[in-house]
Length: 313
Image 1 (tube, one colour):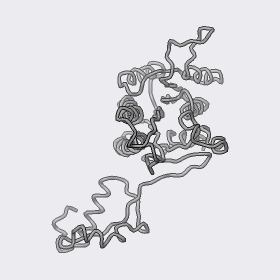
Image 2 (image 1 turned 180 degrees about the horizontal axis):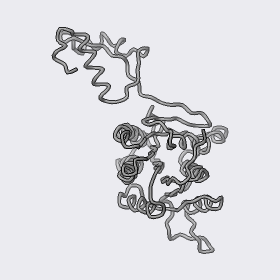
Image 3 (image 1 turned 90 degrees about the vertical axis):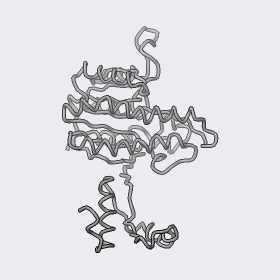
Image 4 (image 1 turned 30 degrees about the vertical axis):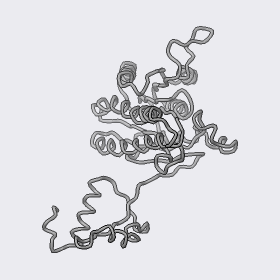
C-alpha cells in the first residue's frame, strides 16, 4: 500500500519549524497542497532582496523548490476570525480542505505553585482553543465533502503527567477529550479524528534532551505516524505515541468493576473491595461513554436479577 495525498489540501499549524515543518514537507512530497501556518514573523517581514522571509515563507520556498505546492499563512490560532480567514484562503486556492494537523503550540513551564494564571490561560488558548478554532473552521466543509482527517497533537505530559507542566498537560489532555467527541460525531460523515503524542527535539524541547537523545528524537522520525493518521485508511479515535522511530498506541483502560449492593455501598465497602476495583488484570478498552453506561447497567442487572426489570434493556 502506498499512501498518496495527490490533490488533497492540508492545513498544518505551527509549521514554520520542528514537527509542523516536517509534516508539511512530507505531505507536499506526497502530492498535497499545503497551507503552511505559523504566527512567527508576519507577511510584512522581508529579506535583503525584498522577498518574504518568515519561518512559514521559508518552508513554502523549500516545498515549492522541490516541486511541491504550498502557501504561507500567519493566522494566530487563538483568534477564530483569523483561523476562518486561513481556511477561506485554502478554499479559494484549491476548493477544499481534506486534512488539518493541529500542531501549533507553546511552553510556559513552571511548577504549579509558581505558574501564573495568565501563562496557564495562554497555554490553554494556544493548544486547546487553537485546536478547537481550527477544527471548528474546517468542520462544515469536511461534512459537505463527506471526507476529512483531523490530527490533534497531544503529549505524554497530558496522558501521564510531567512535573512543571500543569498548564501544558491540562491542554494536551483536553485535546484527547476533544478528539474522542469529534471522532464520534464525525464517524457517519466520513471524518476521522486522531491524536499524535510526539517526543521530538524542537525549539521547545531542545534544552531538555542530551546530545544522544536529541539526535535520535528528530521531527522527521515522527512524521510517518502523522501521515498515516491523516491518510485515507487512517483509524479514528486513536492516540499514537511516537519518538525516535518507535511508534506505540496509547489507550485508556478500565478495570472490569465490582458491583456493590445497596446495603453494602459505603466508603468502607469501597475500601474493602479496592483490590478487585483496582484489578489491572481484568482491564478492557471502553470505546464511548455509552459503552461504559451499558457495562455498568448490565453489571448491576446481573448482580440483582430480581430487580432487572427496573433497568432499561
